[in-house]
Length: 285
Image (cartoon, rainbow, N blue to C red; front, side):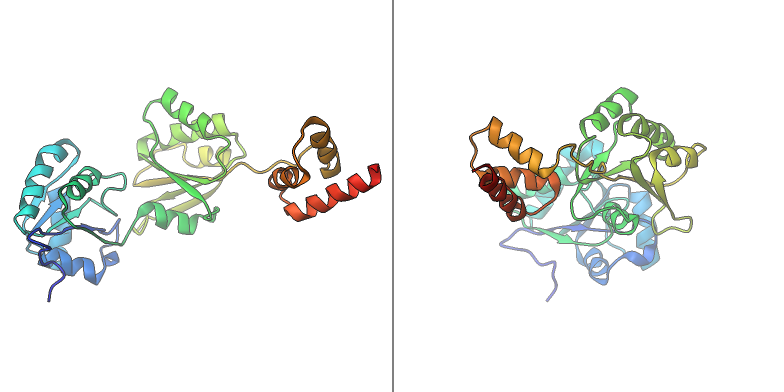
């Protein structure tokens, strides 16, 4: 029994992740699905044909890209309604992640057509895994704005973001983007630039914004992932005891709530600050 059978009369839309560089990074399941479906919708059929020729895949290809999403999407929906199975692929990585696909997925859900993920390569996840920045919390912001004013405005709005920031960037805009990072977030902000992931000339740069500006001052080629570390926490000017005294004088909050607020600010446990507050109360009494 194949995985690509119809479901209640409808076919299934498969979002198939394809290599971001090295053609060996495709899964066996992805290859099987691409061979079994009735149709493959590709961001650029000429680009995808290289993958198909490499693995001997003969499934019909149709184009599905940013400027024909609406019109071509309706035709794909009709094919799915008729029971045909369709795979959606982008030029590289996972479809619908900064690539066409989201609109088609939404249309499938609205029409009651099943959607299935065939997971695999993703540039943002691969870059995060090797960059050496915090991965506990991160925010993917897609591509940075092309224009300087909009780019700086966005970076300014994110200057206090405590998650690692991940962006895609065009190689010809990388130097200008790094200059804006330096201007808006500070020359000492830690960054990582991952270039040409999984390809022959893969590069990982780690350093400050100022160092990155110097390193990438010349012509840059390839696919770029830019990662920006959160700002380094600065030590509060007040001691915990001084902060406790101030909060008690300026608010009517119970000690337990004051302790929770100060715990986040000082990076201490709430119980530790609560005990300090109790000791302060005992001294005053």
